[in-house]
Length: 530
Image 1 (cartoon, rainbow, N blue to C red):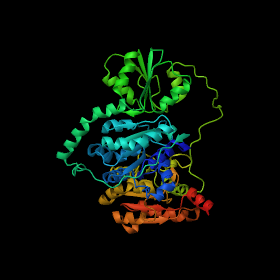
Image 2: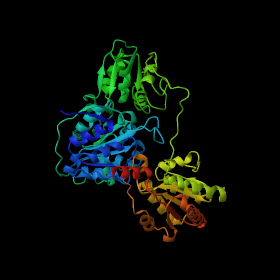
Image 3: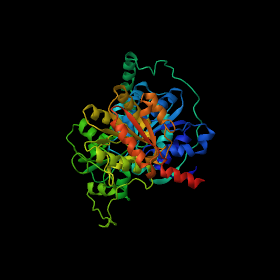
Image 4: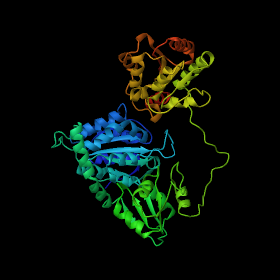
């Protein structure tokens, strides 16, 4: 067997390739991006003609993956946790339709918000959809869960969620590979109406999903990823979920004194849970993210046992779980070997020197502050979000992908003038186009700046779906051609940029300004390759 040193993301990708993957569908999002990138560069991807192009957004990725599963092939769909919100419509309904070929949805959560707007926990999505879930504690488990998960998906006829967190995704460990499996042949469901969710059929499909819940629990109870280990001290029992189990074991290298239930597969294994509960006086729940298991315990046990965790303050309700927090929760002295010197401070990220977004913000803020004191700027998710920081202090909102245009429209509808939206080229094609259509349909008094650096820069320079077509997309949606203005954001063009911004703000309707200059990072990489 071949053993490699792999990131958690890379272990997931390699497992999918080894399990007979036919396609990966994804939109870049930290900490999930490296899964697709690994597959894109793998030799077998070209040899086996495995689909590996980036999608416009997570919704299109989920739908395309379901289409490949419909044809009997094994497919992987990858996104960060907030991407689950975008994919949710298809994802939730895919649990009702079920699948044909194995389908695994990787949801990469970001406790601590290292590069995200929130700390939402994707396990709630799996519970909401009523489907099985995996949560690995280390890279080898991540590999094994994906490698074996396609077979479980095909056995249960349901998509599966693999929930990982940033620390697992971006840390390395030795991973042992398994035997390469062939791709599935094209095949279709024996039920020709399986994927037709007209209400009459959807009701039947939903009953089937509900009837299978006991089977899913039994799968969890027999899963190698759910393990009960007895301990001599029964004053407390510990439930350790995913990477939380690793953090616990770091504190007990010789073995834990308390009984421990390691959770790696959901729904929760009731048999092992009751074994732990009946043996112990109180329960401590260690989970990275929100109190998903803790809430379930308090909800259905009803036997008066004390449950400790995030809800009662034993652990913080926000931020990442780590070995030090676990040590304090189990009552061990936290002997920190190293401490952060008081002179060291967190330095916020900044736009790269030479970035076109810098020139765009420099001119935009000058015009707005000097001539329009009542202006508001609605920004979006991308590098340009850093315009919120000094020296620009240029934006008034950043909520979710695509919200800049629609929030600007709503503000304009309320009478705000000027209402300016700033969005990147990749975010525009991800979820900004429909907002632009709303603006065009009402000729909303909004000035939209699509800051085009010809890549998905914030996640490392992946392809952008609209490269070379932004003007055509805007014109096709209905923006008047004379109000689609393109400029190169360089100091020598500042006066031209000022004039264009003034003219389009003065125009009482929907206009689009496209400052276009290639990302300085992708340009540098191209030069190094040459």
